Length: 344
View 1 (cartoon, helix red, strand yellow):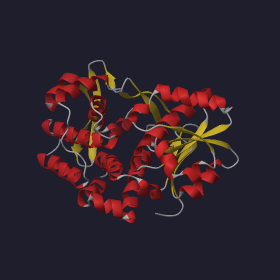
View 2 (spheres, rainbow, N blue to C red; view 1 turned 30 degrees about the vertical axis):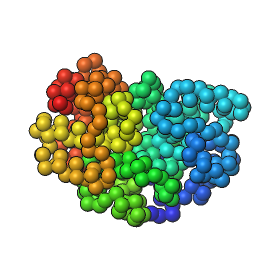
View 3 (tube, rainbow, N blue to C red; view 1 turned 90 degrees about the horizontal axis):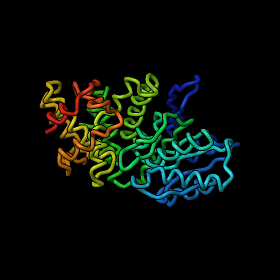
């Protein structure tokens, strides 16, 4: 990976969101120079990067999906008010996808909007959660039911931060990269099918290749459809079932739920006659090599009930992304009754 490697994503107003593949210590000071920067982070990330974060005013929140709520947002608003934060302040979300989702939502809504950027410290955040401008929090356990479309000025993706990442979190990020390959890049899928979890964990050059390819896929889709009017819906591949799984149990990290959602999608696509059974087996084998789950602990009827509150639903239907090969997909509007019959 080059020392200076920037992927630019066009956003409204002829400006760009920049995804920077490089070191935090080099790029963050430059990006916030001359601004009053306030960092939002969590307790775990703060423990790892205290020196970098202590250089700025900061707010530290708790851990896990259960803190991704409007209550946490309200608490941050109160702390910003106590700090005298005004519209000239600059918000930096420093952490994984939960932190960046919350920080982006806060920045987009506090005093009707502050400028903001991210330092993405997990693999999932680097390749998906921090890129593209979706910011949100959960409501009553349902994923991202309150949110905004608002792209950050920058996202710093430093592969060195992944060294402190637990194996399970790293595996979860690989699921989102796998998803990107399934959407439109068969070569990326083949890389993930060929190599193992240990290969990606230990080979920085191999890891940098799949991170960059995954970011490019998402960046290109977001440029063409920033507010999810059409093509961007493809980025939800696997997520209809993933969100239902996350609503129904806390057994899985987001990326693990996405892995299971991809497998549900592949099986449904096969039953529709769109995907070969051999391709379903190839996907299942790839998930196993990446040490991702292939068996869901939640009964299908429970999932079907949960997915009827999906954000993408319209009356008795939902926009569902089906696979037509291991590297291409299409958007279908399907009735819940049809989806239920195919999933059982």
